[in-house]
Image (cartoon, rainbow, N blue to C red):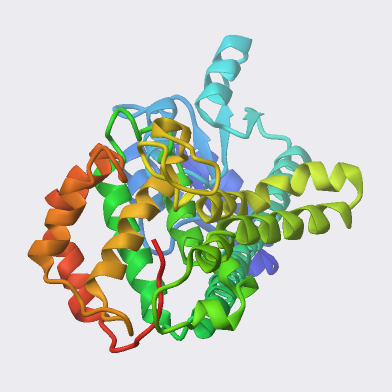
Length: 383
């Protein structure tokens, strides 16, 4: 940033001693002046640690002319932003166009008019100062935006986990179930992200949104009475029907939250902000459909095959795996061999065949997640 002209360095590049002397005497009362009598010397000074703030560059020089000097300056990240004013005796407009095309900011013709030289140098330095200020502000703004985005992301993630924990607390489970299923659905999604059947569903930031939304898959359990949710024994047929309502309860709650938030905004603002709720729409589809089955015998809608959202098909395997691997008040944890056998047997019945194949290919990672984030909670996870 250039505020004090006494600290501003002007580099004059000309192979004629007389021109160096004239320009030097003209500029020295206002700026620091350095001189170079060749293109090679000019490039060396420009690339030094104390590089100039502006360069007055003669076009016609032996060996390396002004055009080549500016070309090299603009190719170097360290020197590309130094403004260059060509000084020349050439009057052909094509020469001027060529220099401007290479990145020169202005032209000064010989013989020199002192007032014009001073005015154009001052103008270009002021423009550089303005660009530097804007660049610094942009850098600060980018850092501030990144900081705020990280903060918002953290708040969002914590909010999701807090909401998910409400359902888990009432179900007597720990938050480790949330963590385990989130980690395992991420494993499945990464395994399948290039699969032809899943590529579109997991493209862009969709994979990240599914992982982010996964902890809310059982949020609907907050609407299930404790007598059913925490019953230690087998549920009656009537009680199981009530339990089966939790996917719809969760999906409706998330849908209401989205609609209420959007309705509080002005129509034009709501149209711009709807994308901000996209991950909640993913959470809504996971909530509603993670108990659907590939063969159409699941609930609540009896969806089958690819009619079940890909996010819910991934969640189904992650959720059932965790249920089978965990000890519950009404059952012991199953051995990994038995869990894998069960999932393989349900391939094409309960589960999407490709998701089961993805599990079988990444089973060791699933076991690692279970080992690292295991708990001794006893609760009911219906499937």
